[in-house]
Length: 338
Image (tube, rainbow, N blue to C red; front, side, top):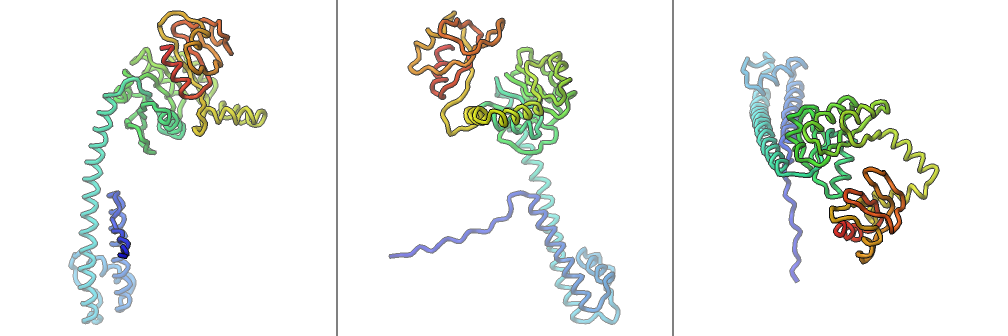
């Protein structure tokens, strides 16, 4: 029986070009330290040791320091230091140039690739703001299959979605994000004034856009609505209400968490828009389903919300039915109502 020897793992350099630059600088610093310590052992004081190491590594050639102390050992050490220092300096210069070129080229390719992806998108979500709130929105929406474009002025945390670098309050940046073809804009910038400005600009560029604006001050909500926002969300207020709900109704809060955020259960709350197929009652629609979900609410544009609609409830075009059920149940209902 032949025993297979384990293969040795090949050691690879870091893929990040700037990591190689840091390694090269570390090598060069090590050469400098060895040079200073070596010249100190050969009899130079600290300043002369640093000076002699610097002119040796840089090959300036001002002449040797040490006077009568210059002997064969001194010159041999200098010779070794020259080769080590020059090699380290050339390697550092090479990887620095490589990092600059590679970083520029890679960024250029990445930006062009992402822009081509954005240009092909339609009906996507534009998230203005790449901070913690924006990234949380991107993760949640992306997990549910939405196409997303993030606008981030500083391009901080990388996500698995196209990122447009720039100021979200600039119309040109919004156009690069495909705002005119987008379905939804989420203004999640840190400043309420910026969110109002983004909302105003986006509404002018796309009148049919669904705009959700973030606000930190409750007094800014009317301004967001006046600017054209369809929904205004205050994360601090929602967070406080959520904590109070957990304290007062822990079972209800836990159930809603599992329904809305836990993927281990095949149950979710979904909304289905009634199509233009004519008016039908809720009972007639559910009769066409093999396993109908549970109707939680019905939203009519004129009347508003009707909680727990009954089977005689008439469904009109444009109404939104909120249901609780499995993904298959909601998909079947969507197909029937479309």
